[in-house]
Length: 81
Image 1 (tube, rainbow, N blue to C red):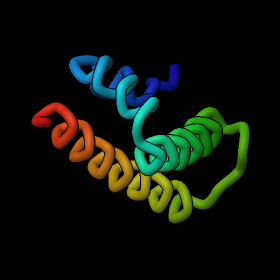
Image 2: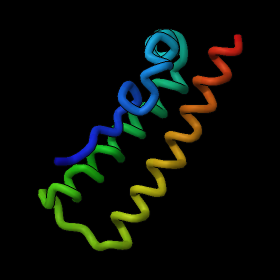
Image 3: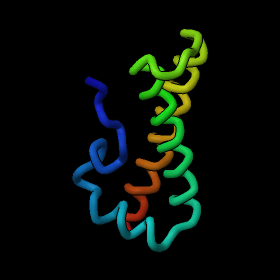
Image 4: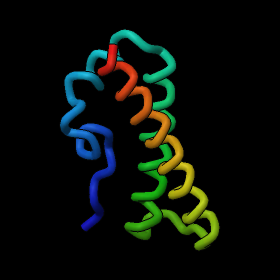
C-alpha cells in the first residue's frame, strides 16, 4: 500500500492554516498544486502504473521534499502571523 503524502496527512496540526492559505495565497495554492502533481507521479511510479528509471523516480522524490519544505515554511510563517 502506498502512503499518502498530501499536505493534510503530512501536517495534520496545520489543517486550519492550510485551508486559510488556500483561500488567501495564490503562491501557496500554486506550490501546493505542484507538490500534489509530483506526489501523484511518485505514487504512480511506486504502484508500477507508470514506468520510470530509478534516477527519475529519485529526482521526483527529491523535488517533492523540496516543495514540502517550502510549503512547511509558508505554513510556519502564516501561523506566526
